[in-house]
Length: 137
Image (cartoon, rainbow, N blue to C red; front, side, top):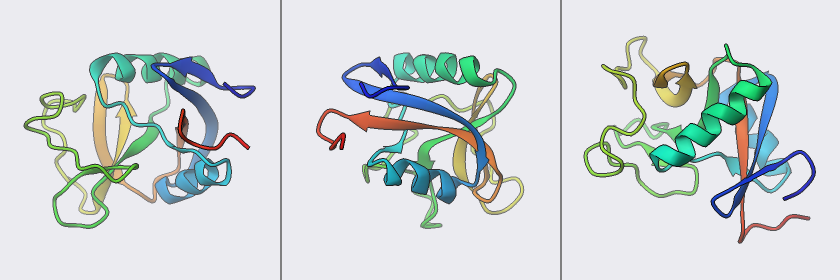
């Protein structure tokens, strides 16, 4: 992995302790040819939570899952659909989430005990992911 990144499951991850909106966080990752991290199973989710806690244990962080299309279909940053019923049942969602409570809560973040949907405009810390097939230059 490049300097500052931690290896897990064939990918490299880096936690950023800087408040960015979801789209700003995506841009920071993309500038480094990375994506926002995608915890597609429970073990990866636990790894990302531990990595985030080394930077700031009390702050929520963005990861690469959103419903910005507004169609009720959550999508991972790599373009694959997330199905709450069949992919890692209920994922890491906290009870009652996602709830779109404040309208426009279409970006997922990890907050203490699990995932939460929030407005994409909220500045939060974030984690970038580098996959094996992604250029490291």
